[in-house]
Amino acid sequence: MCMVDPRNRPDGFVYPSHRVKGFLALALVDWAASALFSKAHVDLYKYVETDVYQYLKRDPMCTAAPDQDFS
Image (cartoon, rainbow, N blue to C red; front, side, top):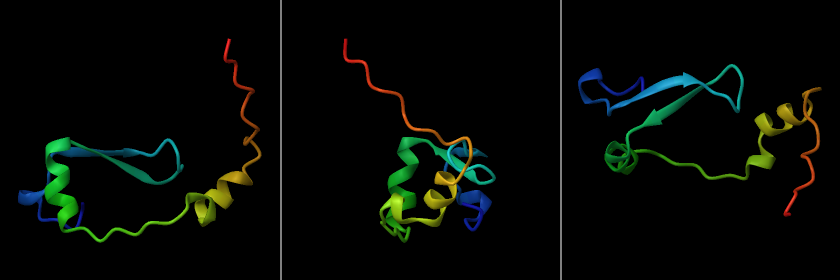
């Protein structure tokens, strides 16, 4: 987003990521996404194979998910 000329940036905002501490996340209005992503280069990969995932798995606060209660 920062590489796009300010006059052409779609409506949205940047905020601190809750998932990846120390990084930013982007909230974008839905009508702006198609124009932005038609010009974007997109890489797809499995999250569990990323360095970020491995880093977060080593976090001492990471614990197993609770059992699901279907009652």
